[in-house]
Every structure is written in C-alpha cells, then in structure tokens.
Length: 309
Length: 330
Image (cartoon, rainbow over all chains, first blue to last red; front, side, top):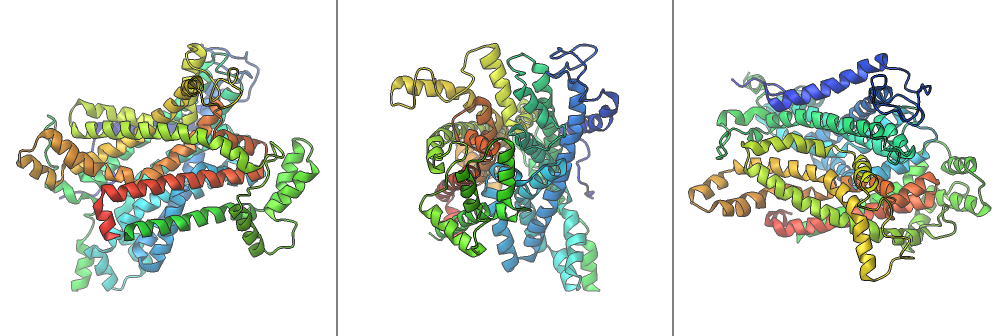
C-alpha cells in the first residue's frame, strides 16, 4: 500500500537539501541576536577575517558577519513574502483555470502565457521606479505579482489532468460544490507540486531582489544579501581586494538556492516516479511499476462510494 | 499550418499586451507619475523647461485628453517609430540610443545563450544517459550553478580574471583608447571578442545549470519509455538509441521552453552588463533608471520585450519542424 506523502522517505539529496536550507534559516533567525549592530561603524575599515571579525569588515567598518546575518533575514523575508503572493496568484491562474476549462481557462491561460514570455526584470524595474519609497514589503509585492506565471503553467496542466479523474467526476456527480472539490479533492493532490513551486519561487524572489538592489531599486534602508553585494561593488571592494565582503552574500544566495533545489529534486521524484533512478550499475532498467501511480493515489475509494450509494 | 497561425495570433496578442502594459503601468500607480518623476529629478538637479513638457506629454497628465485618446496617440507615435526624447542624454531620441546599444546585447547574449544551450543539452543528455553511475554526483553541483546571481558571478570573474590576474579587460565592449567608435577592421573585431569573453562566460556559467537539469530530468523520463526498450530489443546500436530515440525526444521540452528561459537569461544579463559597463541594453536601462529617464526606460522595456518575443517566435517555428505532431494537432 503506497503511503501518501510530500517528501520521499529518505534520500541523500533530500537530507543535504534540508540540512542546508534549515541551517541558513536558523542562521537568519538566531544569528542577528548574536552579532554586533550591522551599522556599527566603529571598527577599522577593510579588516580581513580575524577572530574579532570572523568575516572582516567593510569600507565603512561594518562587521560583515553582522551584515550577513541581518541580510539573511531581509532576503528570506522578501523571498517568503514574494513566494506567498506568487503562489496565491498561480493557484488562481493555474488551478482555477485548469479546473474550470472553457472560456475561463482560455482567458486565464492567455494572461499566464503573456506574463511568462515578458522578461521579468525590465517589467519589475519599470514598476519599481514609480514607487516613491520602496519598503521590503513593496519589493516583495512587486516580485510576487510578476513572478507567478511559471508555477501557474505547471499547476494548470496538473489540475487539468486531475479534473478528469474518476474520483473528481464522482464528487461532481454527487453534487459537491466547486470550491469543495477544489479544496478537498484537487488541492491535496497538488501539494507536492505546490511545495516545489513555492520553494522555486522563494529562490527566484531572492535572486530578483538581489538584482533589483544591484541596480539601485532595492528596498530602502533594509539590509539584504543583495544590498550587501551592491555596497561592496559601489565601495570598490574588488579593487581593494576585499573578497570577504562580496563573496559571502552571493555564495549564501547560491547555496540556499542549491539547498532548495535539492529538496525540490526529491519532491520531483515523488511527483514523477520515472525520475527515480533505480539502476546502480549503469544499465537502464524501468522504474518498478508499483511506484508509478504515486502522484495521484489519494483516496479514490471514498468518493466512489458516494456514487454507488 | 494551423499551428503557425495559432502561434502568430498568440504573439500578436502578447505584443499588444506588452505595449499596453507599457502604457498602463505609469497610469495605474498611485499618485501622479509625472509629479513623482519631476520631484525625483528636482532632487538630483535642475529640471530643464523642455523636460517637464516632455514628461507631461509622455505620461499624459496635464492634457485634457481622455485615456482612450491618450492610448490612440501613444500607438500613433509608436507606429511612427517615435519613442520620445531621452532626458539623461538630452536631446538624443530614444530610438537612436537603443539602436546603438541593441547590436551589443543581441550579439553577446545570442552567442552566449546558444553556447550555454548546446552545452547544457549535451551535458544533461550525457548525465541522464549514464544515470545511476557516479555522474549523478554532478547534479548537486549543477543545482548550485542554477541559482547563482548573474551579477555576483560577474563580480567574481572580474575579481579573479581582471583584478587579481589582469588577463581580461575589466570594462567596456571594446578598447576605447584605440578605437573612437565601432569600425569594420579585424583589430576591432578582435577587441570586441577579447572584451566579450568575461561577460559571455558569466551568462554561460549562470544559465548552463538550468538547461542541464531540465534536460537530465527529461532524459531520465524518456529512457523509461517503451520505445526505448523496443529499440534496445531490436538490437540497435547504443549511439543510435541515444541520439535518434532518447535525445531527440528529451530535448523537445527544452526547445519548447526556450522562450521562458530566455526571459530569465535576459533578466540576469541586464544586471550583468552593469558590472562590465558593457554598452548594451541592460547598461542603458540602468542608466535610464538611475537618471529617472522615463522615455528611455519605457522604450527599452518595449524593445527588450519585443526582442525576446521575436526570439521565442523563431524557436516556436523551429519546434514545429522538430516535432511534426505540433503541426498536425495545432
């Protein structure tokens, strides 16, 4: 009996991914309390890493580790908030469109496809320029409303295929209301996919925020990994040889992204059993048949019972 | 034929939407966009009298026209190829600035994207084909590549290969001390290639991981299809199965998704150009944003979007050739 779950039981990729992601989240939550004020400029400038300043100091004497810790908080907040907005929109444009079908689907899909091919950053820049002052939340909002299209496409195609499953048709025949079918029958089956899309949206938003900050359209007055790299670039960290200033924030973005990608990989292997690599020796074998229906095995029995009753 | 018509219709609508979005965004924002712009400009220096009029005309905030009339007028000037006058480089027309920058971006990004695409597909196919062996350990590394911020890679490359080891030039698209401007000589072309190495490497490094992972996943899925088993049972050569059966089918989603990925690449490249002070559209866009050069910004948004759409459309036509099923089903 295949048990329904979002994540596979155990895999090295998943463990590594969770370890990296969890570590960085923990760093963002705890570290800001343990470091000095990120804007304390009493230290000497351009100190290389030492026992006092584990990651050295910046041109203005800020402690890089302190900046990194507060920056982690800023970047993750932007990432999570933007991803939440993006996922909410992709649920509307993806699942609703996929389930509704007909004209609603045509129109919503058209909007999605248009948003998909319009390059994100120029659009975000044009919007961001008009805002008088940009808070962290506004930046997250802008990234959220421009970054949902990719997820919507994925969710829509899955929702479309779920729509014609027997148990969904059964609950339609049984007279269940549309929102109940969407929430109780369809949404649970989309959870792994939704989780993967959410993680992807977080990375996308963190990268987007970093890019925006770099061109001077980031959040005013907040510290994020993006603003750190920007200040390092503007403060001639490269010519001064202060690699400890600009390497850590970018590396953390990349490592955090990699951690989430590894988690995503494991989720993908649940959604698409074909991706599970079974062969150890290099000759190709087919994935075991038992693994095949993992994407949608949930509770088909219950709604069917309603029909026959 | 129906496939091409449908795609053409889709792109026509998308172009219309992009152009309308360009018109709508400033008008949807809270407050009077022209006042915000003028206030911003006043903070950074004096506003020339001509500029205020240009901005008000562009944003249509002081005229008595209805929004619909503004929209029609906007289309009219677009069709005449009039995108307004730049403020940062007053009074150069926006179209002139853009057409000077466009070849740089298209040349650099076009070449880098093709290299990255081909490399990524080849590597992804190989890793997928040899799945279950040691090559699987490359995957975690490539997820790291996938989420690299473009401009950070650019900074690292500049630091490593232009500052610490001064092998490559740090800024510019060509040697500005030797050449007054673009010219058609072998030396100039050499200089352009020499200056383009690091920017191109940035794009390839940062976008390669995405192609690789996508292709690898499709390859692994494709390899468990029945027709692969059949091909093996027929006793076909391994190389033929790999290229004719597996890669050919596994590459389809990558080609279909090319436009979407391209939109991502363009986004990253805009910021990357700033690091190298590369004379392309991205650099121009950032100049426009920092100088509150409104006409230039909107013109750039339009041109970048249209260029990406054109490339995507081209790829769709290619897709129609590669996968005959699309032509049949529409």
